[in-house]
Structure formats: structure tokens, C-alpha cells
Image 1 (cartoon, rainbow, N blue to C red):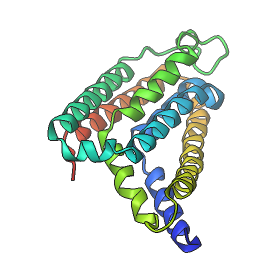
Image 2: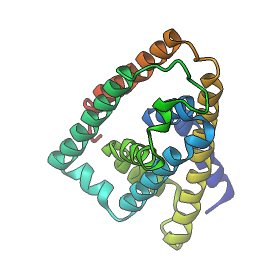
Image 3: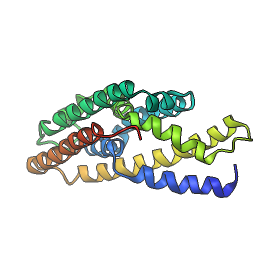
Length: 210
């Protein structure tokens, strides 16, 4: 892979990852609720799912989803329903008088496993991601060169950029955590996060394979 080709890939992924989608929104919202360290399990779930998506796309699952309208629609609507449900939960989330304190019961009740699972399911909920990776990676790969080393470079580059942006969003959320201490501000943030997830779910339900 030529260096200039790799550099174009870096720029492309940099801006794609920076776009506020469900993954980044979840990293930010969990940064608000649990702090940067508490959001690490969430980010681990997001990144594991993205790794599986990249692997599935390389194995042909992306092409299968692009070819099968029924399968694509099933995954799409299941993912959209999950995002809407997640948004409803965030919208109705209780507020705490001890937001940001060590003994905030509303955050302590959510285990690391639950945060990891939520991150994993949010990242896996978008079938467009499978098609995206299946369409993106081949554009930066040489057909006359070994495929696995090129895939490893592209996947590793994507992971570094994606995880860096997740840390940025979670860190920003963690900083907001110390500002959102009043019940009114918490309710407003719950409404914003919930509405954003529900909007993402509705938007996901309208995407096509193309």
C-alpha cells in the first residue's frame, strides 16, 4: 500500500469517525454518567463490535447484506428498534441529587458488563456499517498485493482513529458531568440524549443498502 493512499484513508476515516453518530453519542453520554474511566467498558464494547463488523465485511457478510433486501431490512429494523428503546430509557432516566459524587446510586447500579453490552449492541445495530466497510476497504487496497497485510494496516488505522475519537467524546462528557449537577440540567441532558438516540433509530430505519 502506497503511503499517499494510506494518508487518504486516514483523512477519510478521521472525518467519518468524528461525525456524531450513535457510537460517539453513547461514548459521550456514558462519559457524562460514569466519567472517562467508567466509560471504558462502553468503548470496549463499541470497538469489539466494530472489529467483528470489519471481520464480517472481509468475510463477505457486508456483500450478503448488500445483496439480500430481507436480511438487510431485518437487521436494520432490529437495530432501529434498539436505538429507540435506548433513547426512551435515556429520556425517562431518573435524576440524582448526588450527580457526580462517589456515592451516586444511579450510576453505581449499572455494572461494567451492562456498559460493555450496551456499547456492543449499539455498534452492532447498524447494518449499514457492514456494507460501509465492505465498500470502503477495497478502495484503498491493491488487488495485485497480499490482502491480509493491507487489511491489517487499514483495520489498525481505523481502530486508532475511532478509539481516539471515542476518548475525546467520553472525555467531553466527563467534563460536562461536573456541570450537570442540578436536577433540571440532568433532565435536559436526558431529554437531549434520549431524543438523539430515538432520532438516530428513526434515521436508521430509513437507510437503504445503496
